[in-house]
Image 1 (tube, one colour):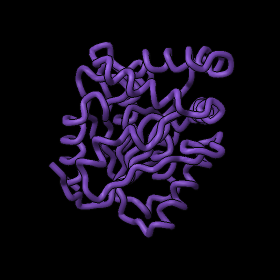
Image 2 (cartoon, one colour):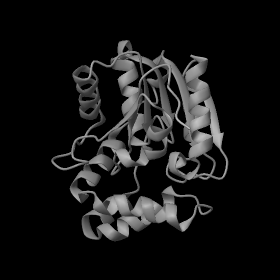
Image 3 (cartoon, rainbow, N blue to C red):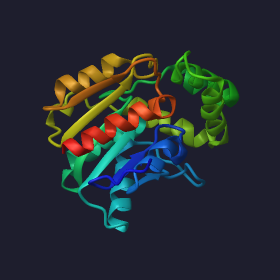
Image 4 (cartoon, one colour):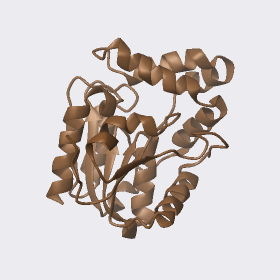
Length: 233
């Protein structure tokens, strides 16, 4: 089934990811696009959320996109929050997926990315994917992470570690949907509840039995929630 969204949807992946994490969503929503952030399909990455925000703005300008529903996962959710504060005129709404107003990163992750990248991927996948998920899903997530440039992944996690909007999220004024997985270890449910408490009028949906990769682990439920939200606008 393919649905025509009322508004253009732009999906932003998380740290070390790429557009493929949104495969189920792009197939489902006709007028949607999943972008690759700089460095995630070759070239240099960025080391701050602000730099990624400017890339997204340039992308929207190049493609003449306005009245957009901006959907960001994890680091992409950090980008969406900052974008909403700085460039709200581009947006119809934002969707914050498995993210937080602050994204501290375990020092062990930095250490392993530097010294043993395959081990870093193993740790990240074990934290990102619910224990209830199939081995196929775990392998899919690991495979894409292993393809990524470790320097770009390190820079992404640096950007996340420096990100802190806990005292600013209450200033977001665009319509906001927050989605998280009940079993998420990387950005626990309390992160999403904080966003929901602070962002006026925001809606929180918790997908039971899912980890950090909700759009892959529970695509039908995720798409249904997103579709209902868009039509409620």
